[in-house]
Length: 222
Length: 222
Image 1 (spheres, rainbow over the protein chains, first blue to last red):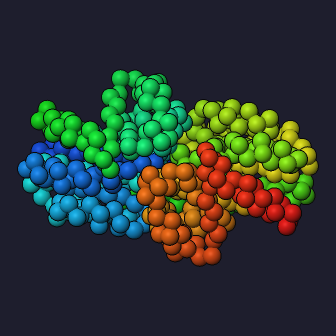
Image 2: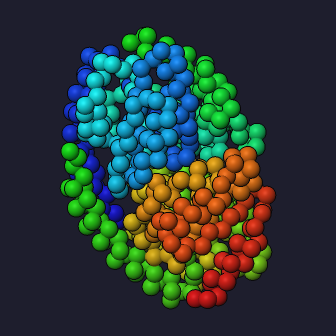
């Protein structure tokens, strides 16, 4: 019916190569003592907004932070994030709907990772493609905005299943869209049992400090 | 750096096969006198909500409508849409982030297309993968909710460029998210000059009748 099997075979080889590179990256990150957080979500769930304020806030806490941000086209996000004063680089993927370890390695050229506490990697907005690509990160965060519907974890199980932590964004709109928090938590639990779920609003700043405390704690635990 | 070139080659062959099948579908649709509208958008932009009421409303206007709805997992959307009384079938794509013409052909088995005025095809929620797959539709509509950010057309130019019409959804939330209508229109115009842009709210019903009038008109024009 579809030519999917052949595509799957080619993809498997690409994934193998990616895994080797991701392992190398993970090793580099570990040796440099930088904690790497990657973010995946559908387009417009608020990955950039969630980084925009926190990059500055984390710098305010004396932490050395940097970010890579992926998109098919434009360097809008890098420009937005660079306003925080943190080093930021855009990765433009062209037609590719995810980041790969090789792109991350290339984007890091010339940066001294030993001078960083946190590196954030914002993946391309997509709930399918990024799932299988290890980027050597310590933590993969899946974001889901309250406006997207509580059923997204059931519809895109793999991206939730391959994440370490879930973050519900745009909580300031929860009432307007009649967001059912319990249903969302239940659906996340169904596809990724035991995953913690946080809720924040980058716009109003609700729960943002608590979120950053938690991030700082993760780095200390390593 | 990446194994993308090899993947592109395999993908090109798949696309060629898809185009042949899509042409056959288009021919079948034309002969049967059914007008086919496909919908693409990011996850949670409101494709299903936009069909939910309209399917019933179009039936109320004496039109014979049916829908196919694509998702990686679950048949939630088909269940939601079937409440309208219209024939609805779910296409479950597994790990695949788009519909293909072959899946549409298979899902139509046993349906008499001559008995339909409109067939709606709801693609998998994704702003990248569905762009290159012709499904034989008369009209491809790209949906973008006011909550996603006005920059999405610039970031995902191909999906906007391959669409025939743009629909801004969840207009009831426009004020809450400070949606900049002019910026969104400007960005759409930049990647797809001349494309018409409509704005609706499935929730409040704002502009819904006008949208359906327009759809009805398209069918008459064929």
